Image (cartoon, rainbow, N blue to C red; front, side):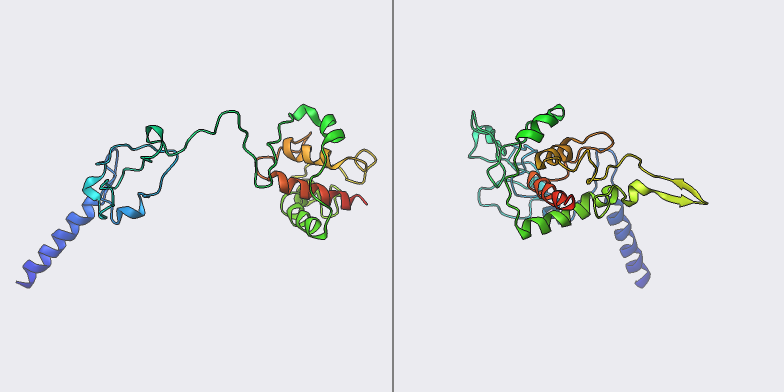
Amino acid sequence: MRFVTSLFVGLSAAVLLTSCGAGGEDQGTEYAPNMYHSVAYEPYTQIVDEDAGRWVTSIDYPDGHAEYFNSNKFNPNRMNMRESAPNTVSRNKNGWLPYRLGKDSLAYASAHMKNPLDSTAEIIASGKALYEMYCDHCHGPKGAGDGKVAAGVKIDGVQKGNYNGVPDYKSDALKNISEGHIFHVITHGKGLMWAHGSQISPEDRWKIAKYVKTLQK
């Protein structure tokens, strides 16, 4: 009897584990499907069939839809993400418009772009932290162009990995650049420096510009 019971348990376990296998169009059995299929509105998916996933529904939703349904009934065509109102432009939390100057507009940015942030101790401290995170490795802690990436390392007495051409912020060519110039270069890059606009928010770029000016003094 014990042997039969053990055999039954073993076969059951084998069947259970086999059902977990996935491949091709078969994604296997899902356990706790609510962990995989959010009931929140998902802007980049559109499942309008209210019976989709009925076989895994484990919750009695108030409106009776099944597990995979994720459309917004109150929007046109049950859309989850609606288009912006006509003739409107998105702004960030500070009310700033998107930065639209192209890479070739450095001269204009240098002359006309003004930093919207004040030179408070808090702003400068935040700019310093951001500089150390995004800039120090090339430009160095004092902006002298001697960061670890720029300097490289010596291996068996041979200099390797150096990134030549990182400028000194206190050089004659850069000591009088404006904060608008710095912001634009962080955004679009210049020369050997790559664009950082996709990595650093506009507000943080302005903070870095503030801090860089303190390094030039």
